[in-house]
Image (cartoon, rainbow, N blue to C red; front, side, top):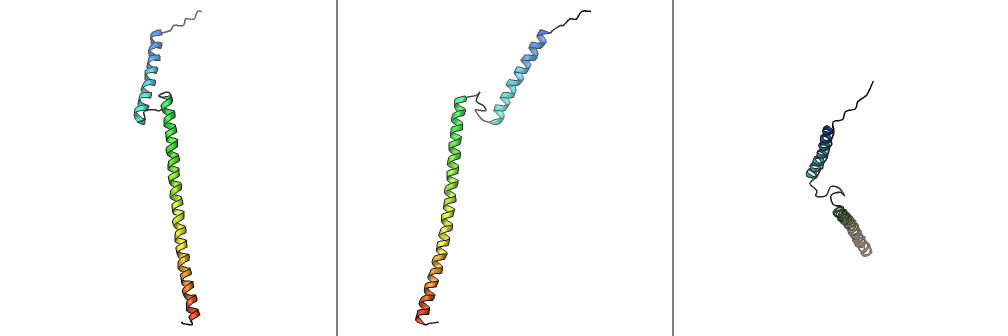
Length: 104
């Protein structure tokens, strides 16, 4: 009993080309759907590095703005507390002067 292996080279080539075209189509859809010019380092390695660095700088600046806003809020809270303390001290002074004069 003999065994024969037949290969259809044309079919194998067509299948390989179909897979290649499918991969390129998926890459194109990924680029179109993301809206970004650079989706991976394979697209533009230097551009991706620059983009990542700028993104990091923007995130750092955004955090600095949030920190500044927190500091402003803290200062405003302290200002309100000092204002209340000033009002209380003025009332204490008034009562002290009133008690020294003997006037009710």
